[in-house]
Image (cartoon, rainbow, N blue to C red):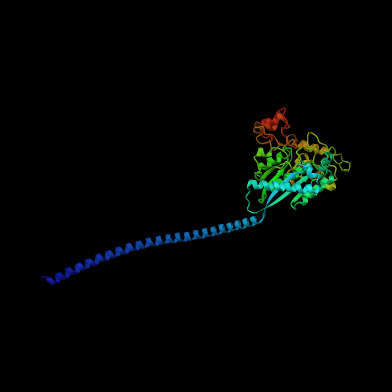
Length: 426
């Protein structure tokens, strides 16, 4: 039976429709798969951005905290600067009164001469600061400190007929009363007492941030050369100006390229010899006075004073270096500039034999100025600033046959420290 045309057309339509549906279904399935893949990619990308956002927020928080810390630090610095500006900056003047003696015309005027000397010194410093165009953030406070041995100074002045002891007392009173910040300190007897105090003064006050300038007058001799060298090594000379008490003062300023204030009319322009006699020593329970030997200066330990008053006797059963703490070589044999910071003792009372032992033992240790780069220093002509006064060894006591030198372990470095006939330091 033949198929009718209507049935054929109907079948064809169904086939076409079914084909379209199959194509549409395949396309839909493919599209869904593409969308699912894209969704997965977007979810991964979203996770990455979320992580980046969290990291950025965390970094921003850290930066904000750091900025707050810096702001707090800056506020603290501003507060400190305001406090610093509210304080008086220090302009100091320290004078070795044993070496720098005021003009006899002022000394003989007594109290009025002291006031005039204080006024002249203040005016000279003020004029210097003005000409130097010193800019400061706060107020300036001017202090003057003079260290001297009053008894010896009075003896010198009287012997040279410059003034009487009564006139000196009045001069000191007039100078001191001219300002509450002007101080005259009698150091009493003791070798290098004035030197030690001024050295400690400079070492201390130069480190103060409030110190604007220190005017230093050390006299006509190179006594303070080691002090100046030590200050230069510590980088502290920038605040120092040398006060030239007379034209014969040491040329510190030219050597170290530092400013100088000349006030030669305020002081006598000559060197006065020390007194012929010193006060007799006190009794020390039978011990003989301290003697010097080997070119060493008179020790600081005065055996003329009793142990109960100034110190203690050493234990004779122990070597000096076994004591706790051992005696300070530089204090007893030269001059110790460490003051209270010294780890060795300044309190022992040593007999001449003990001092000789201390000196002999000190020579077995190399001088700090020479032990490093000895040959270079000698080529440059540099020597120990203490010269023959130095208590430490400048040559090896074992000479050129030193056993430790052959092993490269000798403390005395350099061939020049093992010469047969060493030349003493000038």
